[in-house]
Image 1 (cartoon, one colour):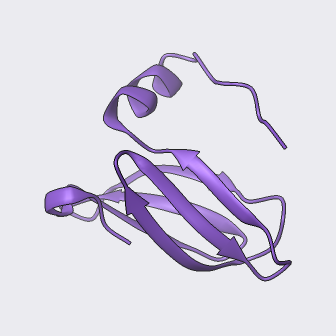
Image 2: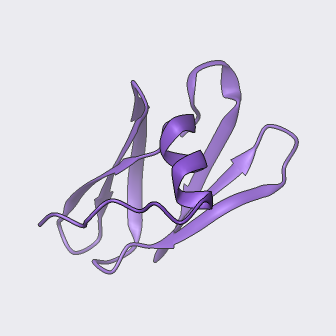
Length: 78
């Protein structure tokens, strides 16, 4: 999956990886619920379906990424 304009590229297995458009790793995050089989980026959110049948949503907006780099992480919701 890619963000609008291809600024970020996402891939995954049992981890979700975010790469910048020049190929550098920006972040990685374990899914904790199976390998990501299909992903879609829409309005700052990354949606993925896992091999365990889960639908996950990650706030992958630039604002969320910058906050996470500063250690400001949201709570996980199930």
